[in-house]
Amino acid sequence: MALLDLADELLRIILEHVASEPEKLISLERRAYLSQESFKPHPPPEPDQAQNIAYFRLTCRKFSDLGILHQFSRVTTRFSRRGLRRLEKIANQPHLAKRVKKFSYMVPFFYVEGRERVQELLPTLPDSLGLLDVRHFVKKVNEQKDIVKTREDARVLKLAISAFTSLQHVQILRVQDHQDASLISYIRDHAELNHLVELKWPPACLHSTKTIGAALLESRSPCSRFSSPMLSPQSVLGAASNPPTTLSLLAERLTCLELHFDDPTDLDVRMRELGSLSKSIFTAAKNIEAVHIGFPSHRPLNLRLEEIFHNVTWNKLQAFGIQAWRLDADEIIGLANRHRETLRGLRLRDVLIKDGMWKNVLESLRYDMTRLDWVSLRRIDYERHFDDSRIMGAEVPDEPLVGSDSSSSDESDYWDSPDEDEALEHHADDEADGSDGSVPDSDLGSDAGTDEPEQGGLLQFPETYDPDTPVSLMCCHGHMDSVDALGDDGVCVTYAQRKWWERWVVNKSCSEHQGHK
Image (tube, rainbow, N blue to C red; front, side, top):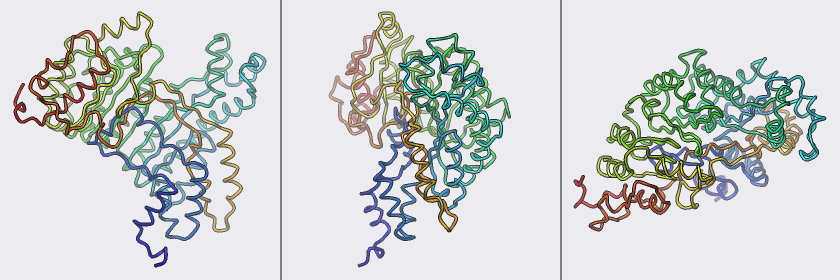
């Protein structure tokens, strides 16, 4: 039998030996859905692997079609001329564009204040910062200004999202290169330089949110999942004000919303200002199946839960997650009970109890939540113990790398490597002279290269249930089924306790105690 006579399924198996499996969006009912790495882009293929796929696709039309699944199921691009140019090339080739299911938009800090005076920084930079060529900053300043002024990004994003007819998920990610990071660090230590140049995230976040939102709305995209790990509250307010109905209209299409907010001033005040907007969005989101709203672990939000969620009930909700919040036990119980008929997964990461006890929350989850399959309690605690630990100078501890939602730390920094991306671009340009007018695949691959976004420390569990909390685990042995077995002292929660509590909550298989309350 000739190789080309093999079924496509067998050829895909062969292809998997030279390429990673194309990204599959995780089913919402799985424990895999919410967790820490959900905002992490899929690791870019190794250079050899990418070249192997390129060679594989050059063999024949059949192999080319099979290889597309690995190359273009997800597309990542930066806010830059080069990134937008590559995105437009993909969008203009329907056989590629229709394969895209996930689009990640990497947005750098915006240069603000005295942009034209950036050259005055050069004499002030110490040798310890390395070889920082001021021309690099001048070029980036001018490029950002030109893209925004000409609305080139808005044009390309609308074109691309319209062409991505299978698009399911859009992410907005924050990214910075080492040179920008060095400049930010230096300016932070020398406030007198702020009048020369300053790099800020809120205006970048606002601009990208507005352009992505407008593109999704105008293109009537089928996309129903949106996420961002570093969202500025100010940017959400700004995006909603022009036009004011944009976010509510987009909310009607959503099945999944994953947001992590941060603000360097007063996060409580900023989030309270979002109250009326969050009410309109969550009320409009009739089809929502998964929600996660998070905040920095070291600065948990101190608003009541319903100041954000407004007692809304989602009839299709399967997975719900919150991160870094000071709450009363009754608040958690109330929201969970509103969704007892549909909720299959609950994530309460870095949640601190102010009034009440965790055992009351866990008892309600175990006996009232009829469909709950998994629960994550990573770094839960009591407010007083958390605050006392901070007063004593202790850092927010990360837990051992055990189970599904215990991975990298919350504030990990990831970097963009412009030199390697530049090399990739030159290589692509060298090959972009095909006589048929098509764009070589090497020029259309992900713009990511070694770009990696900064993390807000959020979502995603692995694609299978956490081995530490399987639904089938039998732990009911008489007194072990009692809430007293939790050992909750109302003071603090240890790592060992919370892992045991996760198992206790989801174990509902003992018929003798199913009716116990």
